[in-house]
Length: 156
Image (tube, rainbow, N blue to C red; front, side, top):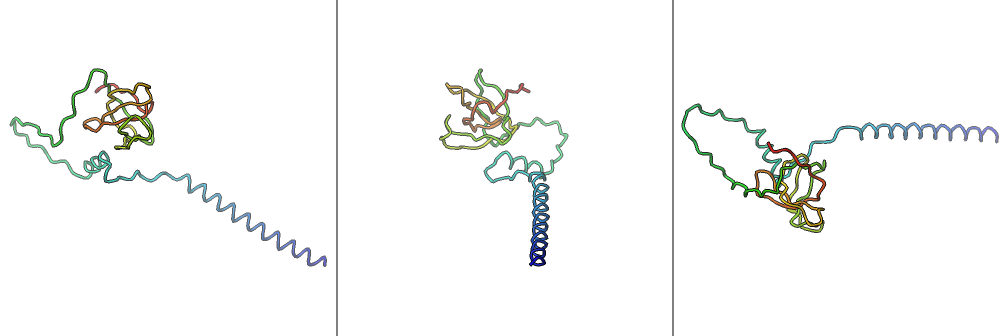
């Protein structure tokens, strides 16, 4: 009887030791895996700024001719409307980007998104000063974002 209880204790101790070693190794592996860097931000078809940036990177620039002809620049998109005196340039400071909404409310329809550090123009603030109406720089796309997630920048 003594021999069998000692053998059971030995086998049980061996199984517990193996289980502890395996679980510790798995936990250590998960810690190292989770410390790895984040993957690059995906580019979606409706993300106009990312598509423009990707297009600019992939296309090589053509050399410009050195002729002294006067040229008139033609823009394919309409120029943005003029700015009022109380507007100012800003940038997005929320590192996850912002949702652009049709009205100053969390329940309002989402009309677009803004990336971190994206340049915008603040057009006005809501009466309760919790929302800001913004326009994308060099665009006519306007919408509302939560106040406090943008930072005023000096005009260039």
